[in-house]
Length: 363
View 1 (cartoon, rainbow, N blue to C red):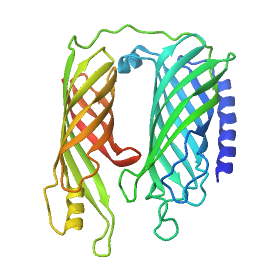
View 2 (cartoon, rainbow, N blue to C red):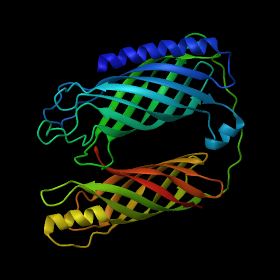
View 3 (cartoon, helix red, strand yellow):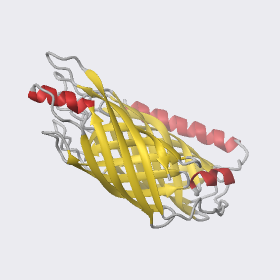
View 4 (cartoon, rainbow, N blue to C red):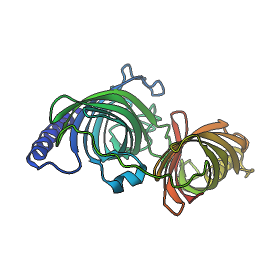
């Protein structure tokens, strides 16, 4: 399957390159590229343990946005586009291979005539050929379902070697998980080194930059968000598999070191009906299950977008709740009115607990 996917991606790359070459130069630059991915470590949480790190490739198609309207969205030049990738986990018994696709957003950190540096955020879905089965694959605790969510980030540099070709190199990180839809769901992290070749339309020229005025002179910000999620509890001999809602409130205050860089912290209140039922199965009766968490971390603001990363410590938690700390990462969009929406993921290291939908206000 991996070999057939590689052939398919190569054919698609050639077809897109020819098509792009036949189109007149557009106002915004277009790119199509093929990257090779080499994993940086071997996961030790799978039985049998893989002896080699994952390898893969990724086909990208994207557009550079250079208009004033695009600039106002994130106060940056950025690329956005779609990707198709495939991985061999080099562990045919437990993990097999995967094929995934999705969308990405890639702001430029530095931009020069022949080279640039960018950071990417992506989201999509992926199919894995080997998922957990109590009989045939009990050692795979990473994937509880064949179809999983795919999120990731990366840091890349491109350099133009001719009028239509660039080389790309950088660091790529992806996380595969089903967000607790079905257990087990420890997830899998894939940090990788990447190199690639990119065909682009037009010439390697410096795109225009636009000045902007800060939306406000305030250094302090406050944000309140309502959270909602669903998590599935495994079936037992007595109980069927069933999803339980998780609700909460997130209150954050922050200080702008600069317009883009914010240190922030606050508290989170959680009503976790999933854990309530889990305690019932453990102890035979209901116990206090609500949680209060103290958060602290960093946010990167680009125009209307905000990337958030916080560490959390559960100061109030139910009996048997482990571990007491977790990480939380979010992508938010703030409208001019302050109305804010987005998504967040809660994780303990490689173990993804759940994804959350967020809505609220930022002042």
